[in-house]
Length: 405
Image (cartoon, rainbow, N blue to C red; front, side, top):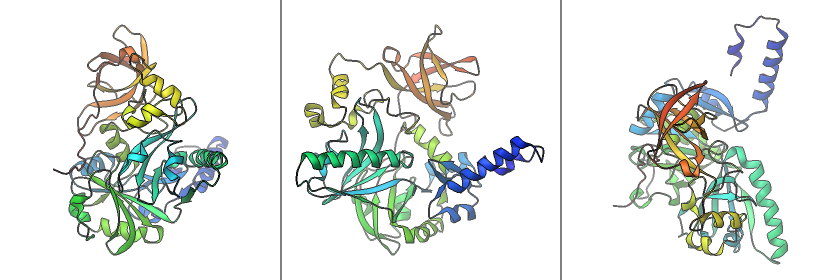
């Protein structure tokens, strides 16, 4: 919402004035990334997101940005994400108390998606952790930054109390920004500014390199779009320079939160707070693959008793995350009820949008475990009217991550 939304309201309406004041208060309290002025210069429509002022789209619009990312290359500002290093000889032992991944087995310069869990097995946040040889580099969600840090610090105090002389420390990378260059032409563009052989930088691997003359950049081949791409951690004082450099190279275009959301949904990737949260276990969310084999055997992470029980043969969680396609009617959005063919309420949509790639309405959500079979015909209730749908496999659009031939 912007102040322009009040143009049709009576000038002296007390309600309108209160809304304007509240909106102004919200805008003034939002944090800004170092690229904020560049977003405005590019015509970005700024919206509140996770306590930050972020561009939801630019002048070409969400669908155009989405399609451009699938076919070419787009630049996203993801500097609102929390970046941190965990250092010390006991860093892996400590982190394995908090996450489900087998970090001990993670090769140098490789990363993995994982989740932080609570005592009941729910997901506090999802994260990417990279084994950077003598430290662990972690990227966490902006909207969870405060609770993540509180959770990590609480457990760090406990770990140090239980393990006298433990060597582990947190380093918040407040002097770093983060850019995501995503799309099939990413490597062609990035190779113009690096001396490293990008063919050796495969999906979920990471390296520190100089990018277009800017040193100390960590380049990780990953992203949130399903396309080949990189996320680049950049010294904050050079972030604008690097962003402008990328945008000066044809065919790079800026893309905002709207395209980022529709791209990740087509790729079957979860949005924290919608598709996963503290009431959702990794097993329910279809993220069991994040739980390392050794971790399944020995546990040792917060909430492991609940999660490992759900993984046992013959066990079944109460619900499952599913993909859903509807070919008629409005797109089923967050909160829409999922019905069986007979009209029984069996679940809820958590994310949904019209797919620019599939030309169909796509969604993900949760249904009762016995109702989650792929191919099951269901209904979705939108504005008190039921529309036909079908449970389908995810991702909706096959990913194009880069692996060696």
